[in-house]
Length: 291
Figure (cartoon, rainbow, N blue to C red):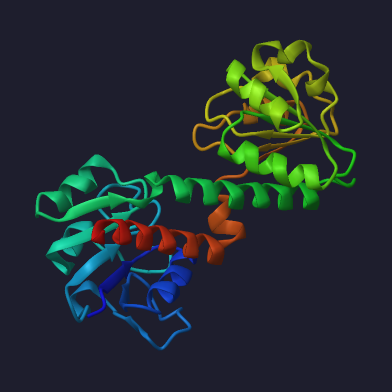
């Protein structure tokens, strides 16, 4: 007997997620004003009360909630209480969600329901990094009046997103410098065929002053006003870091720099691929549990 899923809330990523999961299992959605799903296999419930079964797996969005009380449901004009969703899952069921707060986790686990944060999985982090890098490139191509080939690109940080960016930008023929704090990250930058520069030395580094495009991937303030003053006026700065970000946006505005804080790119630029990535991650988790 196939598993029964309830997909509660979320953006367009969760339409693709529901479509993929419905190929092998029963899927019901809630937290959407209308059926935005293309497959007739998917049941669209008007409310939590009209969900036709208790689920083996309840899939919550990314992020699950902004207030810890109501479901993140941008395509729903009403509200869905997270507490009422606890009655939709079997005793031995699983709740999947992204960036689950301790309070929400406790809400379900206190009912004996297993809670799993799919956003903590490495395979999803890697795939999300690739989607973020491609989205960042799309912004650069749209915003820059010159081609990427031959451009001087500075990447701050050497994590998953930076590595994905390097691979893509090298294919475009960009000249890439990576700036990081750890010596191990600087070594990896050289292994990837990039120039390397310590972040502490950026103010005196030509890579900053000559950069045509700067991508920041570090989730804390790096590009302060002093460093931004070193950037050339035609430079495009794309901050890919999650809140609180890595750039002083107000200072960038005062200095007349083109600065974009590009949050949550996978859900904006590649929602279908991103939704499939989450679905595959959930399937991977369940496969591991069955071993």
